[in-house]
Image (cartoon, rainbow, N blue to C red; front, side, top):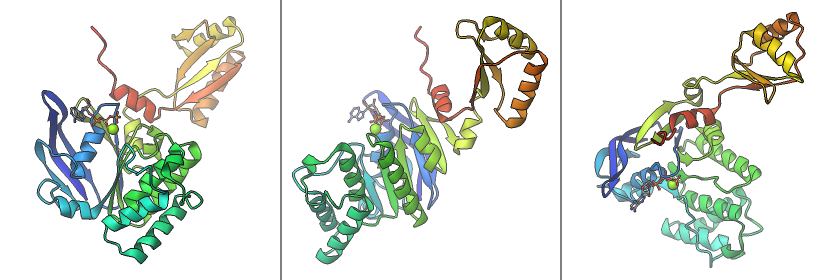
Length: 306
Ligand SMILES: Nc1ncnc2c1ncn2[C@@H]1O[C@H](COP(=O)(O)OP(=O)(O)OP(=O)(O)O)[C@@H](O)[C@H]1O
Ligand SMILES: [Mg+2]
């Protein structure tokens, strides 16, 4: 539904996108991750006809944003990173304005606006000026605006930045129901948990290139780092355990010891058996399995300053 090959974009001599390839199948959720300034918004703007690429073959809903911008615009809904709502209008007025832009007609426009107000929990605020909305309410309205035209493809640039956990969960639910209805979603996010929760495929953008791509599970396998941290009450127990487990990395100040492992019940049983045999008392333990944060930090690590 969305493809790009060799997508390039530079501002002056600053190359932001250095030939990236994208492929998002219909009905799936694609998440573009990357540190601040990686070019996520630039990619979204190019795919949604708001900026032109310097090079690359792009198709969105089967159309080229450069030569058929109207056809692309008819197929997509966009929610930008920064709010596009008119603060002087009410929430309902903003939605009706958008319905006008989509030539929905008065009755259909009002029906669509009311549906979205319900869906985004904005019924009570519908008649209030957006200037009086909280950040989360404004964000919900923003996203609702992108859905007025019932798009087949939805672009969400950091949809849940600034939302509280409950609003974020509600947004995820909205994304899931859009997908269940056959909509294709292209989102950018700073929240790795969000990509983990929603995305069928994740691409990590860094230094102008896609440095990793795959499902959340596939990306997690790229980084080692699963371990069990054992904490002891006294240094003698720590030393005994280190010897018994054959671990050389001990933190004598913190009285902790990291044992590589996947945290499975089987591996924990074996660990405890060894500690029991050595008659070592463990104070507490935490299991650390690699998550997308580890992947992100490992893949987008800054070059050490020389
Ligand atoms: N109009 C512009 N002129 C010059 N440079 C620009 C322009 N727009 C963006 N840039 C630069 O391009 C780079 C990528 O910006 P972009 O906004 O796409 O990043 P991003 O990944 O969305 O970052 P963030 O996570 O902060 O939203 C940045 O270095 C930015 O300064
Ligand atoms: Mg951005």
